[in-house]
Image (cartoon, rainbow, N blue to C red; front, side):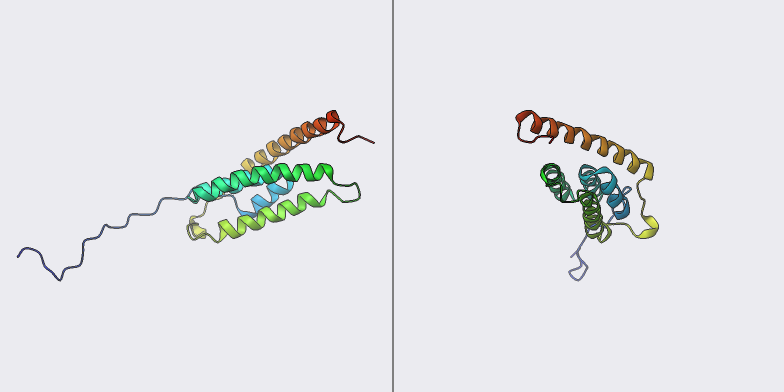
Length: 155
């Protein structure tokens, strides 16, 4: 009789959880979405999901963000002139900030405040500038497509 029948079962010891890298705060996401557009917001939300090891949500964010960004740009181009377009960036900034707050700030895998690292604001500025440039290129391409097909006129 070498084993004790009353002994606790053998279990593997838990190791330290994997360290979470730097995240974008909800204020960084909202500001970047306001200034850089929906592409930047999608990229930042996806980056946070990848850091939090939520790969399925990161993948869904990538595709839904790309589709919604294209629809958003088409909607802005085709709106009547009576509707103020300046409200759209404010709305997308608010929506992106809210999504970052709901999904990232309340995530149980998110490190506590003393261990939390945020991404550099210089990186956020670079993403904003790249996103704004990309949005201008896309808008110009769509405008040329609509003007070239005769669907939309400049009058």
